[in-house]
Figure 1 (cartoon, rainbow, N blue to C red):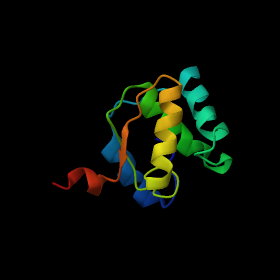
Figure 2 (figure 1 turned 45 degrees about the vertical axis):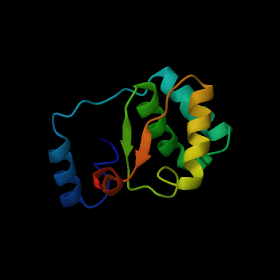
Figure 3 (figure 1 turned 135 degrees about the horizontal axis):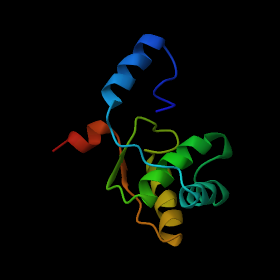
Length: 106
């Protein structure tokens, strides 16, 4: 929600309206620990800590998919295997990470 509120005010307002009423998952201690591990073990660089938290929130909460347009640190074929490995070593099944377009393709 914080990220959705950033940027152009009119665009941010539209994003927040679309998200109104959607369930919000908490950044628990478990989430923060997995996020830190994703950074410490290498797949996510320290400057992308918010991206590590997005992945961790999805994994810890058992989400099946993590949709993102972030192809630099999240929906990246090179990063995915490393993200999945760190998540599984920590006891979490990682979500399928993909762009919305990938999910919609038949």
